[in-house]
Each structure stands twice: as C-alpha cells, then as structure tokens.
Image (cartoon, rainbow, N blue to C red; front, side, top):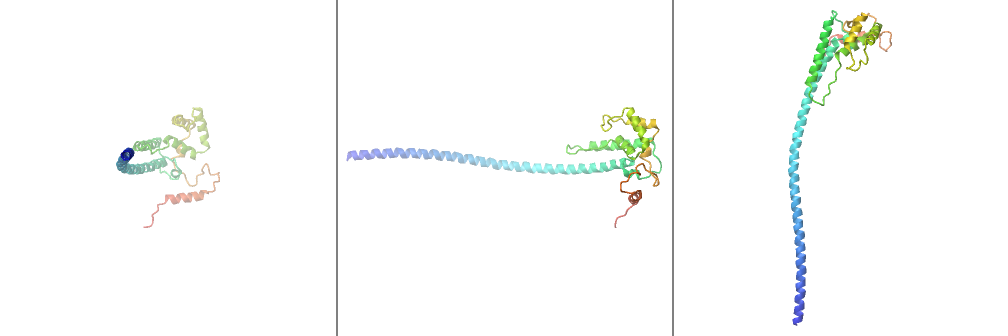
Length: 239
C-alpha cells in the first residue's frame, strides 16, 4: 500500500513538472504576443500621426501649387500683353505683311526707324525682366534681324548687289547672333546706293508692280486688294 502511494505521488510530481513547463511555455508565448501587439499598436499610432502630418503637407502643397498657378496665369497675361505690343512695333517697322499694306502719309527718316528699333528692344528687355519663372521660356527675335528679313522679303533684284557686297565685307552665318553684323549690312546698302527703308516702311500703291507678281500662288492681286480693303475698313459688331 505504501509503495503504491509513493509511486502515485511520484507520478503526480512528474505531471506537475510537465504542467509547470507547459505553463511557462504558454506564458512565454503570451509575453511574445503581448510585445508584438504593443509594437503593432505603436506602429499604428505612428502611421496615424504620419498620415495627419502628410495631410497637412499635402494641403500646404496644394495651396502652394494653386498660388503658383495664379502667378503663372498673371505672368502669362503680362507676357501676352507685351507680345502684342512687340508685334505692333514690329508691324510699324514693316516686318509683317500687315504693315506692308498700310500706307504712310510720309516716309520715315532713318532716325525714326532707329527709334522704332530701340523701342522694340526696350519692350523685349522689359518682357525678359518681367518673367522670373524657370517654367516660362521667352523667345524673341532680334529687331535688327527682323528689319533685314522684312527688306529681303519685299525686295527685288536690286538687292542682289547688296548681298554680294555684304558677303565681300565678311557677312557669314547671319543666322547665329555671334556672327551677325548689322553694321556691315548697312554699309553694303550704302555702298550700293540702296535704301532699305524703301522696301519696309513705305506704303505700296495698288497699281505698283510687285517683285513677286510673276509667281502664281493661286491668289490674284484683285482678291488680295479686296481682302486688304476689308481688313482696313472699320467694323462695328452687332449691338
């Protein structure tokens, strides 16, 4: 009887040790789960805080973007207004077809032409100074180059000696600003006895024979005069 009790007690002690080890293992697992839960809670809390900060940054970024858009629109309006003034001045120089069709009451002097070129350059520089954004690229044409282009666009065979004389004087690669010599071209005009203003700033009579009239471009001179007359006439829209 005593031996049975001893054996049973021994068995109970072994089971107790096993239960204790199992309990310790479960406690360790529970502690690990608790630590992981706390880490997850901390990560969730940090995520919420970051999301709130990101929302504030996003709102600020949206506000900055809107301000930049408004500034860009304002600069675009200013640039468009200045471009219109530049086009108007270039038209007064005869650099466009519209100016060629508008007769002048008197022939401008060389000082008048130079004054118009100076005004155009001043407007271009003012436009460049007004634009401060890297996203806005301002392209403009050199006024002296525009003047020569107007001359050769409306010129006739009398300009051939001028071109040769300018070439002899050293005019090369005039499409690049660093090689363009406006003074050499003006010297060539003077040496050949040709007035460049004759082709640019004066008005053309309707009966005058133009250098390009022998070319057939599918549009008669009569229709061009009729169109020019409609452009020159004042138009009052519907009231």
